[in-house]
Length: 492
Ligand SMILES: *Cc1c(COP(=O)(O)O)cnc(C)c1O
Image (cartoon, rainbow, N blue to C red; front, side):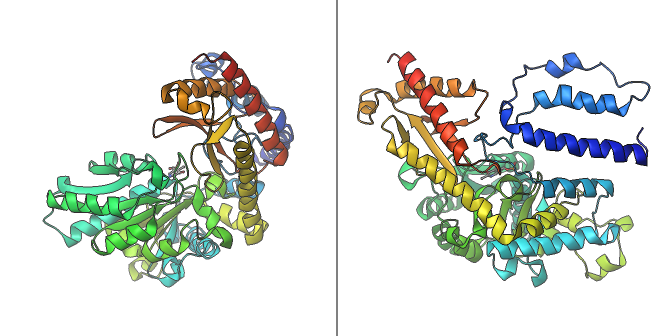
């Protein structure tokens, strides 16, 4: 067991090793190369009876765990979406862990609640959110959730509870909420958890997969005619597959005729671009401010704060607490009873909560709003550079318009886009599958596949903090090399 002095030594060593890890990051394979079950083979079947020497444990982390990690911080990681990691965030996590407490109400550790309330206001102001979302407004407010899925689930719970209070006779099975076919699985997940219908509305390729007001209007009218009770729409700014942005202004206008419908805006990935004034129009800031009942973005994706840190704002905090407030006698406090403090346990699903606002505080102070903006701008610039390479090449095409820092592309069979008309979609998909499996076999890059309207394609997401132009150039040469080989092998 470590005592204080042994911890000091082990802690210094850990920091040294983390620094070495970051120095060596670029030389490592991006994706882990281990086979399933590798770790079970390497570990004993039971926990040791007698405690072991900590140095052996620390060395086993290097020897057994690191090879089984995929390096999301690698500058050639272009898969999924980025997951943030900064040294400021790490240090904050270490401090938070050192005083470990479950922070479920104000009295359980006043700093945890107060810092979170202020950080959510700092973030809201950095993103240009309307004053009604500020904790200082006393009406709306912001809270840190674990993930965007939790943020959405909590919002669905609040919306449902509000709807049921207004319409107490409505049967649970008649409730329905909407997403689109492009919405993240968080919608379906919330439907499964709550045992209610989540209807995914069809969106069209000619709308770049954005939800239009007319589609929502038709669904609302249809469902109401059939005795259903729509109570919510989850709209997305920056979908996972292709970065689509739902038309919030049209959605907002349609919902005016259905005032009981709650609008949740999921901007888990792209929401952090709101920090930059020049992206606010694309990211729909005005419409978020005008129409959203709740809004979520993840600092832990592209926003420099280490996982996890999903930020959720609501226009009216009462709708959260009306749905989720549980105050047994042992949780009652003088300040809580008086309503003078926030008790964040009533703003999320669990009781206990981590001290995550410390990470936000360290990061926003160390980078400053300008530093945060520069990070976002760099990702978008590099992404635009990548898209320009794809556009200029006759061997590739962009499948959808690039969105923020995401490009979705595929290789074309005959070296020109006309040629691709002659072969069937299925054959081109086959070519792209083999192209993608070549890319996946490479240790020096990582990308993800997706399927858009029957078209198999590849996503290229920029945003890891260490990615520079040279890594885009390197990625481009790998992509070209594997495309040539894939086309050569391919016999239509
Ligand atoms: C990543 C992502 C999510 C899910 O994020 P979690 O925080 O892991 O739940 C939801 N929506 C969008 C648009 C995303 O990009």
